[in-house]
Length: 356
Image (tube, rainbow, N blue to C red):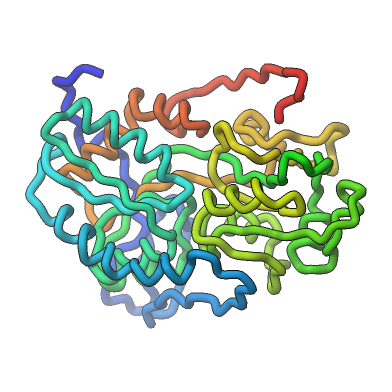
């Protein structure tokens, strides 16, 4: 990339999601057309995020993760983003959903190498925690593995005036098992019965009579949102172990021959096996990859979204412009994503393992 190139805010094409409430005769919130909503009428009372109460049978590192959250926010969020900067110089602390850390970190490394006076630092944080940090003025920007809900968007606008979004790319959320598990395919009925606890044995999927151990990333992250979107309200009760990140889910499944995981990050050199998806209208099971996602055959999608509370002209805007440029979109593609800003032709190369 030519180092004389200076990213411009105009290249980012930010979309307004909401503006703060104004005087309206009908008592409704003003709402802009954007990525999230077409039009809507909402009561004038501000909606705060209702963190869903959940029963977690196995917490793992969650308590530790959330225990250190205040320290992370106090230590890096406000200080670095508060420094004076330009699109190619200064310091920026950016919070990123854990599943998106590898791709955003790869972009930050290249950006910092290209612009020597820039220092973009990436901090992994649960999606709901990023939203909370934006509401509480601890962060102005965030990279998410999903779009924000209507309640989350309104909550941010309630304290921050504006909210803008930008879609950078998409990837697949994937069902994974231990390499020694003979299961190769899963369908919607099997997945729903497993998640809701109606099916607890591997017998129907692999012939083994072992108990199924389901591992999921936190509620509210991209993989969980993909499940909610697909099963459309059917997941009122889920029988699963929740972990603090997609990487933690992969680590557990890689060590548990009876484990079944669902993760929202591209799998590169992973120690797990991907399950194919049985589509009711297709003869052959569908592999989980960006090719089948692009063709509309594979249903579970996670998106790399950028959110900010202002139309910015600082380092945050420069880094976003870089990620949306050809150079940034190539990095996104190299990380296993379907880039949003450049045309992509996906070529499927079949091997002896038939698109594992």
